[in-house]
Image (cartoon, rainbow, N blue to C red; front, side, top):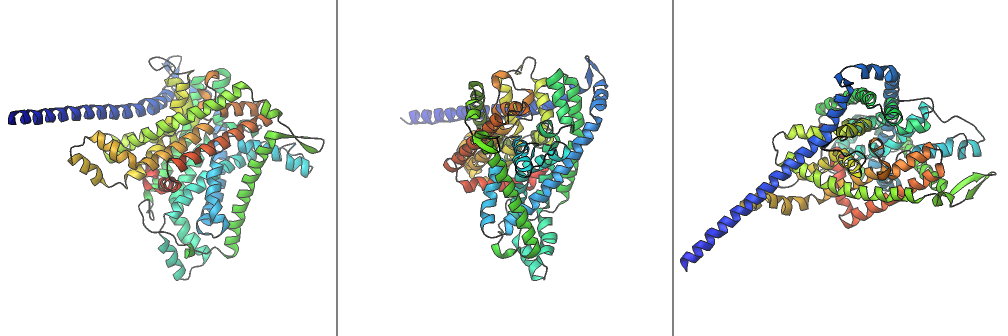
Length: 575
C-alpha cells in the first residue's frame, strides 16, 4: 500500500512537471508571437517605405527624392505651416477649456468632459462638411442668413477645420494632467497673495506643461498627415500628404509616394525630438500614482480671466452643437426656394453597397478592438512587468505608429504585404492589421498604467504556490487589466470606425469601409449622403462605446485609466 502511494506521488510530480513544461512552452510561443508581430507589422512597413524611397528601377538611387523635392518642396512647407498653425490654435483653445473644466463650478464643469468625449467620436471630414454647409458659397449662415458669397476654400479653412477636429483629444489630455496635479501648490500660491491670473500662469500652466506638450505633439502629427481636409476645402492650397495620396491613387507611383512620405517624416521626427527632450527635462508634478486630489475651492476663476475662459468654453460648445446639428439637418433636408425642405432621399440613396460598408466597419472595428486590447495587455506585461530582453527597443518600436504620419504607415503596408509569403493586399486582413497596430501604442500604454499599480506579491504568491507563469498571468494579472482592456477596445473601435488616413491606400472595393464611402461621396459633392453616413458612424460608435463601458466595466474605471495614460510620464517617454 505504501509503495502504491509513493508511486502516485511520483506520478503526480511527473504530471505537474509535464504541465509546467507545456505552460512554459505556450508562454514562450506567446512571447515570440508578440515580438514577431511588432517586428513584422510595425517595423516591416517602416523599413519597406525607406527601402522603396531609395530605389529606382531596382538600383539604389536618389531620383525619387529629386522628383519629390521638385513636386513637393513647397508642399512640405505648406504642410509644416498649416500643421503648426493648427496646433497652436488647438492648444490655445484646449488649455482654456481644460483649465476652466478643472477649476470651474456648476454646469460647465459637469458637461465639459462628456462633451469632449462625445466630440472625439467623429469621423474625418465632419468638420469640413459642416464648414461647407454653414459657411460655403451657398452656406446656411453666410449666404442664406447674411446674404454673403464668400470663398471658404484655402489654407485658412484647412487650419480652422484641423484645429476644430483636434481640440477634444488635446483638451482631454491636458485635463488628465491637471486632475493629477498637487492641489497644495495652488493653496500655497493663494496663501502667498497671488491673484487668479498669476496662479494660473505660474502654477497651473507649468503643472499642465507635460499634457500641453503631449497634446501639441499628437496634434501636429495628426495635422501633418491629414490629406482629406486639404482635398475637400483646401482649394488651391495643397500639402505634401495630399500629393503623396494622389501619387498612389492617380498614377500608382509608389517610389515617389514613398519618398514624399519620408520627407513628411522629417518634421515629424524633429517634433518628436523636441517633445522627447522637453518631457525628459520636466519635473512632473504628481502622476498616475499620486494620492493628492484637487479641492473645488482650490482656485476660483472670477473676474476677467474667468469670464474669458467661460466664453471660450461656450464658443467651443456652440461650434460643436452647430457642427453636429448641421450634419444631422443635412442628412434629412435640403434648401430650396428660400426654405428648408425635409426629405428622406439621402437615406434612400444609401444603396446596398454603402450599407455593407457600414456593417463591415462595425465588424472590423469590433475585431480590431478585441485584438488590440489583448495584444496590448500581453505586450505591456512582457515589456513592463517581465522586462524581456530588448524591452526598451520593443517599446519604442511599438510606439512608432504614433510618431510616423498615417500616409507613411498606409504606404508601408502596400509595400510590405504585396508579395508572398505575406501577400495581403486586396484583402480585409490587411485593413484589420493596419487598424490594430496603428492603435497598439494606446493599448500598451493603457495596460502599462494599470500594471504599475498591481502589487507584485499577488503574482509572486501564486508562483510560490506552484502556479506556472502563464496561469498566474491568466488568473491574476489579466482580470486586473480589465480597465486597460476596456480603454483599448473603446479607443481602437472608435479609431477604426472613424479612420481613413492610412487605410485609404490599402482598401479594396471588396473591403470598403464607411469612412471611405463618406470620403468618396464628399469628393463627388454628394453632401447629403455623406451626412447620412457621418450620422450612422457617430451614433453607432457612441452607442457601442456606452454599452461596452457600462456593461463590461464601470465607467469610472475606464475614465481613471484614460486619465492615467494621458498624464503618466511613461506615456510621454514612450511616444
